[in-house]
Amino acid sequence: MEGYQTRIPMVTIAWSPVAELQLRENLKYAQVMFGRKTAQHWADSIARIEKRLLMAPESYPLEPFLLNNPRLYRGASLMKHFRLVHYYDKSHNVVRIMRIWDSRMNPERLIADLQA
Image (cartoon, rainbow, N blue to C red; front, side, top):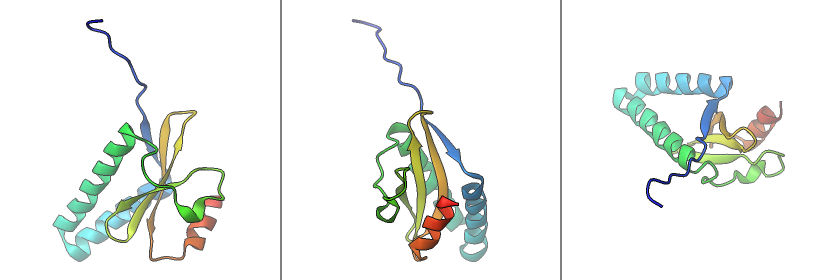
């Protein structure tokens, strides 16, 4: 059937206010402490993660220490020690980025933070 196209609803990405603040702070810190190139590397990594999330919102692995949460939180590796913690809200077709987490920190802190 020539000219036939299937329309797949586009996934959207929504950043929580906390994650947006963390992003701005981390980008600013990276630029001040390590230079523009490092900050740009952060921005490029986030753009790659967002692109993948738009195409495959459930493609990143589940966060093992968040499995007891009713939401299926996933983590996308962002730089060496940081993860973009997010979940896919199927009912609204939205990936919600909740935190930028430094994986060197105690996971109990993140668990408590996401439950608040």
